[in-house]
Length: 244
Image (cartoon, rainbow, N blue to C red; front, top):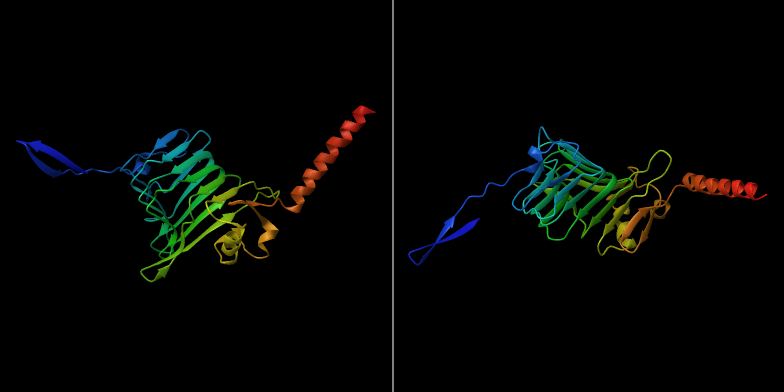
């Protein structure tokens, strides 16, 4: 940070050192209240505090952070959103997985929301031999653009992808919205090993997904649709019995 001091009518430029804080190092999991990553501060999940969960009522607010948001850089790390919310704004670098195959990063959106705003400098998902995954079950993920996937650095290629998962009963109501993307873009991701359904991209895109505008969501499995139909028929039957 630069500071100008006026002495005897002369502007003297002084360089003041600013000590940015790593907010993750002083945060306990699960997060059930608001945790703010302010201007100049970072969120870096390192050894000893590599796994976090954001539960209902929890809000990890990095909207105004100008530092870094990094998981899986010094060690394997995960951020599970289970009813809470994570917002990432004007950070310098968003990095999920970097350095080697023993360092991986997972953001698991079980329920709740992950929102990334425009204004970041770089966004990497899987870099330099590591794996970075954004997994979506019943939550929502909103991005201003796609992150850089499968990034090569120092001759090593990373692995980065999105994975939609469903519960054992076939339900899953999660969604991914990437500004400007259309159905063909998501199809290309599926065909290019950047988008999976329950860890696989076998079969056809249309078997699993549907796209409305720029939003990708899961098509309910046939078994789930059958349960819905059966439930509706049961309600109708009960109603008729009471009307007789």
